[in-house]
Amino acid sequence: MKEKLVIGNWKMNKTFEQADDLIGDIFDLLKGFHKTTEVVICPPSLYLELATDYADAEDSNFRIGAQNCSEYKNGAYTGEISAEMLSEMEVEFCIVGHSERRKYFGETDETVAKKVDRLIEQNIIPVVCCGEQLEERKAGKHFEIVEKQVKESLFHLPANHFEHVVIAYEPVWAIGTGETATPAQAEEMHAFIRSLVEKQYGADVAYNLYILYGGSCNPKNALELFSQQDVDGGLIGGASLTASDFVAIVEAGDTAVKDN
Ligand code: 13P
Image 1 (cartoon, protein in one colour):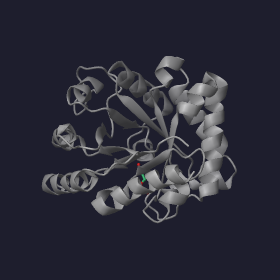
Image 2 (spheres, protein in one colour):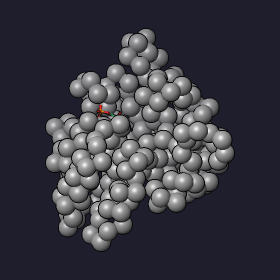
Image 3 (cartoon, protein in one colour):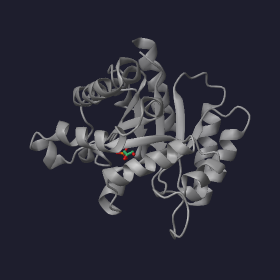
């Protein structure tokens, strides 16, 4: 089993002072911890410089990601932040296509595909989210929905670019609800996504792809989820806002690899 990746998505939470405290606490807890799990923290954009300062410090054990970027390169797009700006800020990852952005800000597979291109141009790793709504699962359409999202936002990429993306499966009904997908449900969908990638890009690219699970992942359920063959780690919302919970999930990543 390959090493895990755990990404914390803080969403629109924390004052500057609280963010400073949280990232400082995570820094301290991870310092000197010989983990194998790769850790990425995605704070709100205004705190990225604070976060990258921590990530640059000696003994730092994590990397930094953004939660969004513009689909445009630059120009008259008031309020937007470009991939180039993120790159200058030493941001290494960026979440795109999160269901909250699809729901509240009209993000579509087409805009996600453009954002992916902007990020790859800047050598930033896109973390592309996909996942079905509850009604879609109840109607048995979850595979179809996820297939469309994955193909339309990513399959325009040549293999050498696709190698630099991460996919996060986040069933919408599990986000912030306390209702987690069962390990079997997560594994079934992750294996399906990997099979799509294998058909398009071949077995090596598919094997090396990181497919993260997101949706009410916490210190209690992380180990069982991460022990599934095709679950390469997690995209963590609520539990990433408490340093001890987040680090416990990182530890679950290490344990899952050791035990398998
Ligand atoms: P929760 O962990 O709060 O359910 O959020 C998941 C998520 O949306 C991460 O991007």
